[in-house]
Image 1 (tube, rainbow, N blue to C red):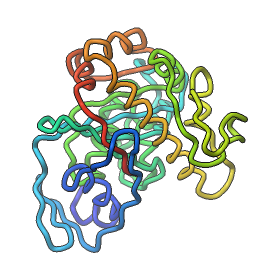
Image 2: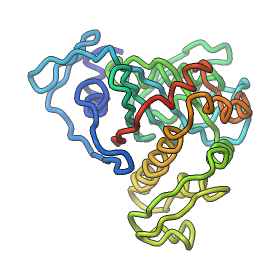
Image 3: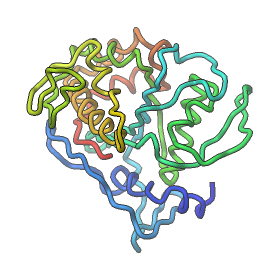
Image 4: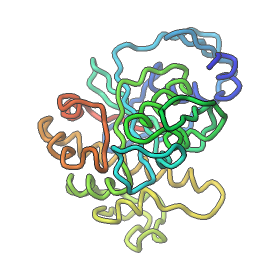
Length: 287
């Protein structure tokens, strides 16, 4: 993808990558900051150097970026799918780990963000590229690790060649299973969500477990800008989930996840890499 094409198609992308690669996030644990970043006037990227509003920035090599995808299917993830039928990535996050400070932050990407995606045939070869919603890239792969790789590649290009070091992908069935394996999460409702569940009145602290986890992160109002509302709830949920993970011993994380590998979860992270997530302090989320 050429630099000029990225500038035209993805003018908002640098506003996302800035939080990870350049500026970072800083907020107290349990009080995540949710920010809407502004569109830059002019951007250009060459290698790991970015020109932003007349200044040059170099990518921070101390960072590890892991792509997290939530796929809207109940099918087993680790299997071949016909292109267009693998499922869409309804939730897209990048977890950034700073190896020096041992801090972790999350960048959320709107599923409807427009970019250039690759269309694959049954043999896993690219047959053409089209401008479409980034959520569709997973669908137009061949499922499993190939769709994860295709999504990683497309999102990296969308974010001006941001290095993505690994992926962790989960289907719908995994939401409740992982949530309950961690003992559920507690979330204070910032506004009224009683249409999702009567317990979710504004200001209420709700313990989310069982099917309530999926309902909370996937419920979508049939109105304009409903995606933004769902993204904000996903931030609340992921924040609570990350806090729960950070409280675990490093040796526990793989043991919690391993029963669900290949079925509801697919990842290229090693046992040590998964367990190392418990070494980091979660600092916040940007959308």
